[in-house]
Length: 93
Image (cartoon, rainbow, N blue to C red; front, top):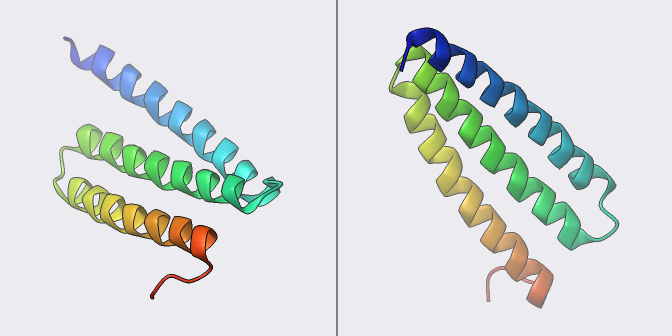
């Protein structure tokens, strides 16, 4: 694979992930129910994590991969906490 093809494909992936983040922000702000807002936030952190991964591939720096791992862990925990709150009304029993 040539470097030019990799560069263009990473740029296209970053543009698409940015568009996905805009759509997720729209869903998080304008969601008619709380469940829609949680799904929008979940999609937002996943797209942000993937955007960091593409930045890491493009720059060749390991720091972006570590930041994406932290975002993935915190996003999963926050999604689980929000789902539990919506189901039972409390997070800690």
